[in-house]
Image (tube, rainbow, N blue to C red; front, top):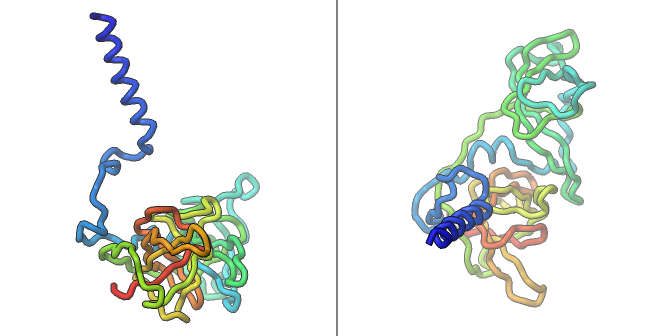
Length: 265
């Protein structure tokens, strides 16, 4: 009897351990099975601060690089990656209109995606704290990804998110609306899932705008029908490209997937 009881306890422990291995290491409250917003009819934050200030976009070939740049940093001989509270030196000073308290967005060039241009990663903010004759000193804050000497600065602008509903994905008439392709996903992952970003070859030239939602399609083989696998929302628009966030997906999104604009918002 004691052996059977001990065996039962061991079995329960084994089952619980297996469950823990299968569940990602996130707070328990976020692991609850919830009805997707797509089907719940509830509004939620489709575009949030992380999308606005931590994502990437395409610097297209005709666009010049920013003229303000990080040219050095405190303890730069000891570390390459710069984070919150680190002090950096900029190549512009008071003669160039830089003022104490001025706020910039720090961005860095990433992978080149021919023929569209260079991917630009939003890294953090930089606040000017001191002025010298020909340079200025800034402190980094709200870091999304580490900054580096050589990164560029652009004037910081407040942006607004968007509240709404995920319209989901499903079968669509291929000729019913505009369509394009996924041209880039995060180079570390090679594919994008829910709440991750990607770039598509649709922009202002195709008359899309922030907040537009799209359906993503995949073909198992070129001669087979396409399958709807994900929904996306546009979070940044450039001339020929846009940054999108995956809202919900059945399969991971990858470069080459077809995207099609939903006809309703």
